[in-house]
Length: 176
Image 1 (cartoon, helix red, strand yellow):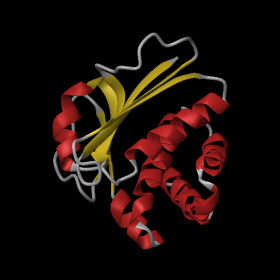
Image 2 (cartoon, rainbow, N blue to C red):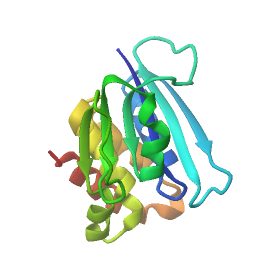
Image 3 (cartoon, one colour):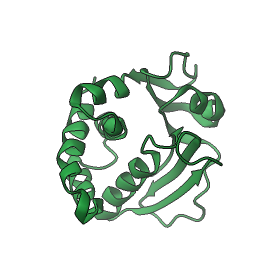
């Protein structure tokens, strides 16, 4: 099993955290993992993406040319990475900020991650809603491992954010 995942959005949307939590959860389950972050020139508001590879065998390179899964949190990210999804891949889009069509050769899913996050009371958890949707669609890692990863990654002074992130993750996992 090898899954190549590109996660893209604007700086400040929690793109790196989404990838890091996914990678941590996969490591907890004994998988080989790479996580390669890439920030735009202006971190907050600029473009940001990360590449995550999950595998049951050693990984030779963290770079992803063609992704099995693409998660885009805004329209510029869709435009930039649309051509990087493999045929019959999985494309998950934040329909709150992406109104364009996806990719004709991919399985496309659109969910209003930002709107759901606002209803939960914190726009910054849209990333965890997206992660929950991914976990529900692909079953790459267990929800339990992701919950453990969120708790372990949270800084000691931010433990109050763990609860809202967990609620967001569970909300995303309920999306169909």
